[in-house]
Image 1 (cartoon, rainbow, N blue to C red):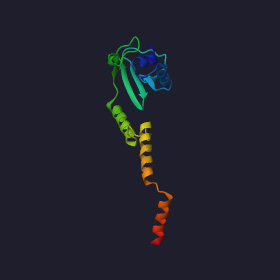
Image 2 (cartoon, rainbow, N blue to C red):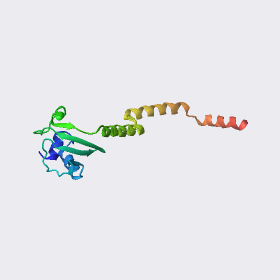
Image 3 (cartoon, helix red, strand yellow):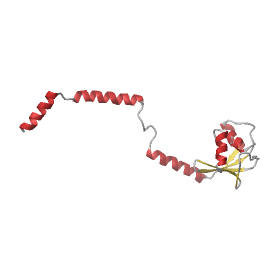
Image 4 (tube, rainbow, N blue to C red):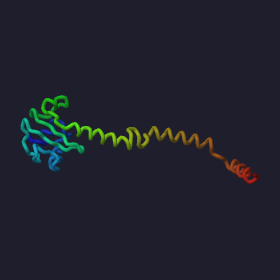
Length: 143
């Protein structure tokens, strides 16, 4: 099976086209050699993949006939990625969460309506008429 089709069938990439593009960018290699999309994958091959700034390493156990379910991936591939790589991934996710927590950002339509209602009612209670302004300044001048 071609390597682009294999990476798609074990759900490493969402589409076969994305897998082929990543291979063209030399982010996939078998052993120490970078490969082309047409390279045939065999059982026992060790594939190194650079994805999300992490170096994944997988060993081919079986070749699937077509795209398989997520639960069946472990039957076809053994994960040999170093633990340090997964720790780097956790650190990167934590550093991104530091800047912006989930749920922050633009207010929803409902949030904006609530804010508008709050501001309108607050504005009506504190608005001053011209008479109020005149009396305010008279008090200031008299002092």
